[in-house]
Amino acid sequence: MTLRRTILGLACLAVVGLIAVGVTELPHSPSSGGTATRLTAAQANMLLAGSPPALAALHAQGGTLLGGGARALDTRLASLKGYPVVINKWASWCVPCKEEFGAFQRVSAEYGRRVAFIGIDSEDTKSGDAIAFLRSFPVSYPSYYDESGKLGVQITDSPSTPVTVFIAADGRRFIHQGQYPSVEKLRHDVERYALNA
Figure 1 (cartoon, rainbow, N blue to C red):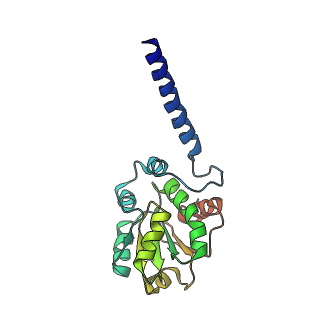
Figure 2: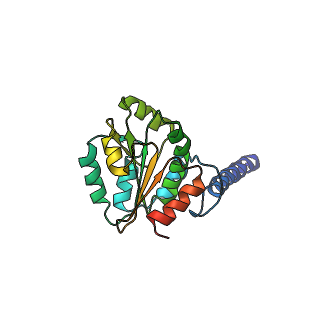
């Protein structure tokens, strides 16, 4: 009986320790430092818990590739009226896109209860390549498939990839050309351009 209680007590301590480690590794606020980018699904879900319905609908489609083009994206943006939006144009063949996706995975989870994140997969000739990419770089938001690249140019005013558009709740826009070099820089621009902080 004593041995059983000891084992049970040690198991409880181990679980508490694992939870403590997991919680301390999570960013407690968007301004927390650190260069680690990848989050586990459990960590992302913890950060996104309690999101408003319009944002929760995005999270429910996280990591998926959606069709419908400009009409579907316009409908989605209309449903997000009143929320800041960050749109990231990427492609599975784009090396800088791959390098910045970890930052988008983390920052979209950190800010996902206040800011809507959306992807545009631009100029991937095969949707299967884009889907495989999203499986290897899971994010908490969907991307719209843009095989021709026209939607991406329309939204970002640029044929380049990656490009990120920040739309504040009042409609003001800022376009960032090129790769985000760090989580910190992306956080800074979300605060400055999406949240007008």
